[in-house]
Image (cartoon, rainbow, N blue to C red; front, side, top):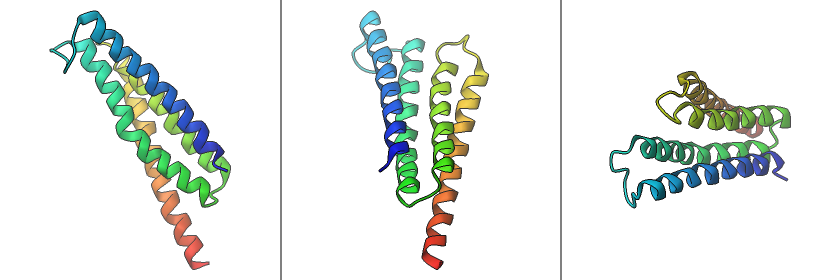
Length: 132
């Protein structure tokens, strides 16, 4: 069973819905159907949503592979948690021009480091399984 993957996908999907609803709300309020019309709030909301959708699928595949192949649950769980926290922090850091930049930076650091750690973990684990 892929408990960690299921939980991670659920949290990330809920975040995606929240970010999507923010885009929709701004579009309705500003009457912008396509694109961003130069509206900074809409641009930020679109990028927060898009950024999540750019990283989450690959991370979920990596989390699922690690969990399915038997990498220790604590390690998979910690890496998944770091990724999810990174994805939650990132949109907080780009919400508006007054948002604390350190949330965006920390969000991207957690995202990229957790993904890199998942890549290395998967490669080493598969190698270990093949040669033992």
